[in-house]
Length: 471
Image (tube, rainbow, N blue to C red; front, side, top):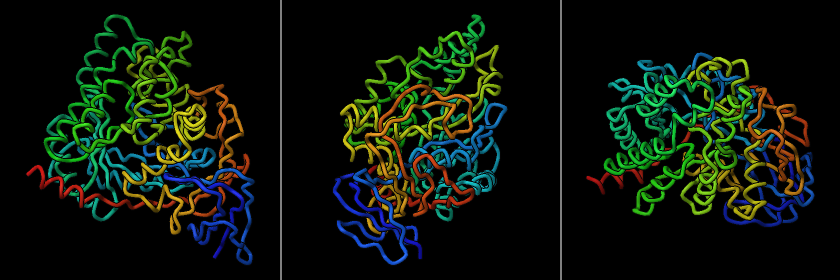
């Protein structure tokens, strides 16, 4: 049994921090305490007073995603390896069946793609159509494969968009299974109409992208999904909240006692919509993702929502497309593949702009980058925790070290970085994945295929009680 002693660090968990050593044995945290002795043959890593924290969990990634006529350039190996370089040790990716494709068929395809992952991974499964086979497959996924969340795209008309009938059917099935429904909240009918109008008016460049997806279309969809969940009595998780309109809907519902969770992307906290007006097509198109980056006042609202506890997790929506792929929309912004990178940089960005600015404490940082995602998605305390018995997915964090983000030096398989040139303070010097060192002071040691599939727990006790309350 291999073991490692991390000596001389300050342990930071979601609720406290203290000076302690950490003993890792057989991929698990075996002991946490002051003055621990290293077992015979154990490796010793000197933390040198740095912080020792749970590795990040990115609950929203799209590795190797077939989308808009191309395939995302980061696969499950390169994407998870880049995550390890930045301190992220687990991801929850998305299985997205084609309309009419059996869910189990799509799930097995994604499981095959993910076998090359270098860090642990789970899956949300998207509901893109509905019949009795989808109902049955959701049960199989939840009960036999540990899929405890299902995704619903309210955007992308004529592709994977869910109408209200599908939302109601799937949300109801989630309630039966104790699974958590999640939504991409944008009104797809409005987006489709606005896209058509803008192109007809001759607005075909990237500047048309945010115009076709204004904050109101996100706010409407978020509120609609929340009210459907309210009537049915199910919880709800709203992914990549980018606009104050959607945040207000979440905060209002939570104030009324509804169980709604919100996720925010590092990019939406830091980048504004001026990027789409840059005359360089490659630069502007490199920022095209949905929902788009917003006017600056939305960033202030999102930070406030994160601090107030209305937004619970931070993610990236990591979905890489290189310049030649983005060029497919050179003459029509609606054809630009939607997606940006970020898995390597999220942790440093949240530390620099969150903890460094005083918006977050170190323990709050752990909550919004790791612990909350683990709790919401059925991985806690195995992940997101410094408890004895948890997986040894850890980072040694140097709160004083700095690095400058650049596509020239990042490990993500993409030729562009939306955070290019930002110097951030707060760096992972060591990343452990189930006790194995995968990143050491700039040396990436990620092992292809070392990642393991994560069976996640459902939330049946709450959901059953909630269903009775609404009966």
